Length: 357
Ligand code: CP3
Image (tube, rainbow, N blue to C red; front, side):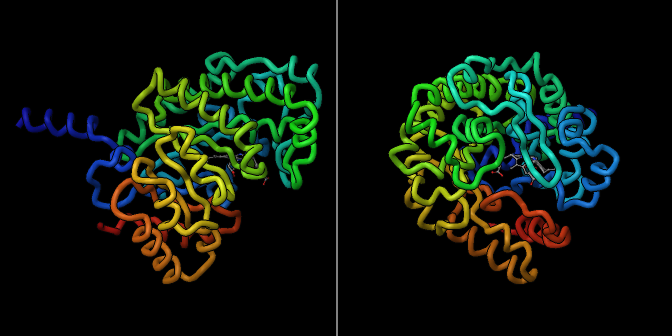
């Protein structure tokens, strides 16, 4: 009947994605699943796009390419989260920090910041002016995915962004940013404050454009000792969370830091809804340390995807059992690694989606 059809249509568009229900602690039949860096180089379909469009900046700043690449894992694996294809460094050019991501080398910042005049040059970010393609892509993704999964946005955290901008790119020992932190802390604080203001705005912009949850990557904050984390990362993360919660109280925020075992309790102090664990901490212990309020994500070693399919199955089951029922998003403990067999990724999703509590 017409009435029945209308009700059905309404049910489709109003139904909340599993991931959002799980984060809010509602009754769910299984943990939602997605993979960090699920869009990218381990997929043949992505490599084909890279041949045609060799520039990472172009691939990540052209609406059609961003949508197409974000949808590649969705089309094949149907994850419960569809993350925008972009980079944590994407806002930098809009902040007057020219950069590129060079094949084989990684991120390159052309004029690294090393003193206060460098910080003065950094402009606060106006997302709608600088990265309209991000908003447009998120709006299209939200329509295409249609609540069958959650559309995920993301930003880099102030300390992690500052590490690239001060070091000039990826770093092993983080000596330049530590030199700044431990000899001219005011200069670093001024830079971190600009990033905090800018990323709070960017999260709101992503949410207003269609993102249903946003992950904050503070990948390298764990290079700081706990006291230094409390000075150079935690206050800015808290500011971002507080600012976003004021205008978007229902937007789930996920926080990821690589190697965060020593900082878990402090990560929860930021007020985020979900803490994403890497694989150096046992899931059951991590859950206990974080307490019942916070949801957990992650924890599976990305290297597991190079193992046998039986091994992959057993690790999924082990992680889900240790995380306990609800408030858990199944994911890897860091981004999926280049060279991961696509059939193992397919197996991971198939097993994960077959789990029932
Ligand atoms: O998760 C997803 O699928 C969304 C896409 C995504 C990318 N970068 C695409 C990308 C996300 C979420 C990021 C976040 C990001 N970028 C982080 C935080 C996550 C983490 O890994 O801790 C960091 C630290 C960066 C900075 C960055 N960008 C690095 C270190 C690299 C790798 C350089 C290299 O060549 O190995 C990049 C480039 C990048 N960003 C790639 C992808 C798919 C690889 C380059 C390419 O595909 O051409």
